[in-house]
Length: 238
Ligand SMILES: Nc1ncnc2c1ncn2[C@@H]1O[C@H](COP(=O)(O)OP(=O)(O)OP(=O)(O)O)[C@@H](O)[C@H]1O
Ligand SMILES: [Mg+2]
Image 1 (cartoon, rainbow, N blue to C red):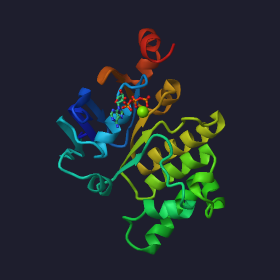
Image 2: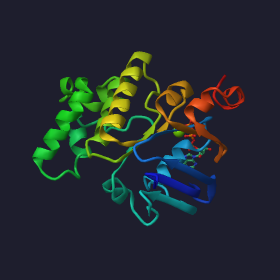
Image 3: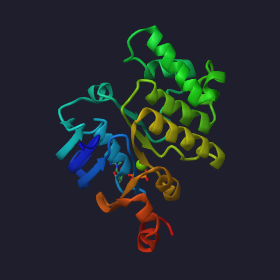
Image 4: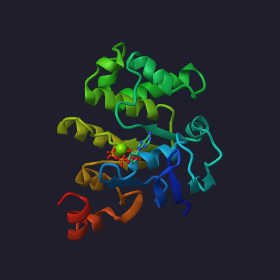
């Protein structure tokens, strides 16, 4: 089956500096794939290349078998790639409602926006209570929920998540991951998930890649990686 996302020999970086030295990676249709690795390994750079924020130097990026190389970031978003960047992927000066509206700008008509907004409140009920609050004043967990909802409202087919658990209390992390699991199962949305917490990532993902200095050091099924003592010791923090 054609993977939903495929990176073939992806070489990318910033200016003349090459950070990714030929990444091969696949996300199965409707699958969850984790992208792990130490600080600076190139995880965020990989997501930026997929969503068109940086231009690859070489290699290819395919969405449902079609190359994204000649597409702009907004075209890639319109093709169904939702990106929740690292840090806070929200506009702090805007309210929760306005953030959701900007996320849904591609939806046709008020009814579509309204019904998607209601779905977001089913997944993240707290957002409904905070509708008029400025995003910058939300708690870290609430901001992360808003960032995910802002990407999800446009009905992406593939969700790129950059460390959704960063700086968030364990209980809220669990809530967010339960919702992500539900989104993946019910809507069949593919997910490429960057996560520092390897145990958490391997729990939700079917397979995982470990990046090391811009190269894939390890790839395997989550269950195999979890049980591989050498992989755990070398790459996953014990
Ligand atoms: N805008 C940029 N300009 C120049 N170099 C950058 C830029 N962003 C990142 N880099 C460099 O690219 C390398 C990979 O960074 P990247 O953010 O992809 O790592 P990461 O795996 O996401 O790390 P972390 O776990 O710390 O988020 C680092 O050496 C970083 O300094
Ligand atoms: Mg990063």
